[in-house]
Length: 304
Image (cartoon, rainbow, N blue to C red; front, top):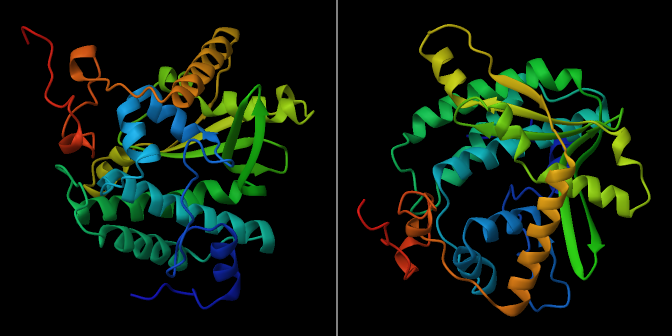
């Protein structure tokens, strides 16, 4: 189904400017370790911490696996809110609500149309309905309160011998940094404290001579379970959490240690699997698309 208003040049220009992969546009793959333009991103750092073997399959060997349903959902939400904010940044107002909903639906359908999506126990139709409710609520209730200055802003910087890259969803006119999330259920305060992205953003600004301690960092968490309740007619649970990032001296110390340890591992080519036997609950067929390729699959703690 065509997206309402997609013929509007503002929407097309915003989509292309943000390189979001619509209308057949190809996004260039990331450079591999050892390439002269290699960098370490927030996503790569998280994958190395989750399982170095998974990182090797993806970034060293270049193996791609079918995405999960949650990834399809998150990308469609990201595309829609990013385009809406980019249009809002340039024109002073966002997309019409019909165009927002059609853009999400079209983006979701494109992702869901790929082969072998790992849906697990998710129903694609129900997931799409939840997304329509969530994105409609976010762009009508939250987006109008934000005056964007930068959308999908990225930059590279160097920490010691490590080249880093950071991408931020949104910076508003008051220099508030906003990371837009989708989640199956409400975040706890602890979930907001364990995120790495604010530390990376803080360090990127510090290396550029900025004063990041004068900036506020917020999460906009869009909660699928609340949308599910709304669709079922069971109350009016809050669908968007707005939570501040909490930075600490201990958190910076941990981030630095993890960052440089990961960089050394990648340089040395050390990618051991983190299996269920070592306490990694994500080492399972449900959560890892590389399950069938990994020698560490199926290893469990003795006695369980």
